[in-house]
Length: 302
Ligand SMILES: Nc1nc2c(ncn2[C@@H]2O[C@H](COP(=O)(O)OP(=O)(O)OP(=O)(O)O)[C@@H](O)[C@H]2O)c(=O)[nH]1
Ligand SMILES: [Mg+2]
Ligand SMILES: [Zn+2]
Image (tube, protein in one colour):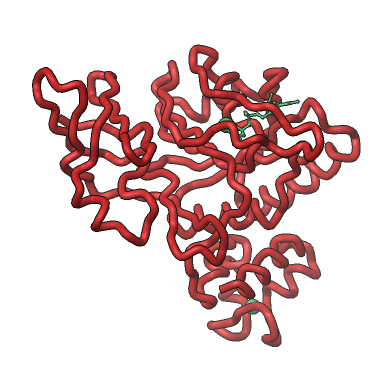
């Protein structure tokens, strides 16, 4: 039988079979051995072959189909092992907030760079709109302009009040999508708002730090009423990048990559070189200094 992995806890893998039933499965031992670079041998969204003996309460994953794509990160930039967040995705959404807890630009850019490098279309959803004051609404306008100029759609929602939720529901229709972001940004609350029939656990915020409480502990794929699939993921603190070559990093900043043909040197790193189109772009405003600083920081870490 064929199915899609909808949850994996290490010891158990839940597979959604073609008829929609969910079967608890074990993994054949060989998968654990094959994939030592990754912490997880099977990822959410993997298409798998399952053996299910009559009368048995659980099945066995016997084959993992080659992935069309996947998105991956390290827990921190120093980690040796990487984690495949999900596979076979149509779109990845970063759920960001400007308050409680604020999502940093560095985090947003590392997420976007990874999505670019793994060829997964990405967008940003700014959630918790209901708690932004005038000043935050102004910085939201500024940030959205920066990211839209770079080529990323920005959306605004309040999972609590319901603003913007209809639009997101339509984006997810018939697609396999991922929600990622910091703990407490409202990934699970947004999923609940999109499809009230679903019951992902929604957390609280710690009173003192206004940070999330790591409520979602395992990634899980939910089926929406509109035939979309959405992967809810545990909040992450850092988006550790997978070893990039210094020379390739600008390729994952689309607005900088576009300018490379205008740089004097074909292998311009946009740092010290003369006649650099990216650096003049910062002066004329076609490249944001914020994004350029993220680029430098990633370059520096690689
Ligand atoms: N004011 C406001 N609060 C929200 C909104 N969305 C979520 N919250 C609150 O933020 C807290 C965290 O929400 P969750 O949905 O659990 O956050 P999460 O991103 O899934 O967090 P993890 O599962 O820990 O990664 C809860 O107290 C929610 O009620 C929103 O749009 N506005
Ligand atoms: Mg959650
Ligand atoms: Zn350059």
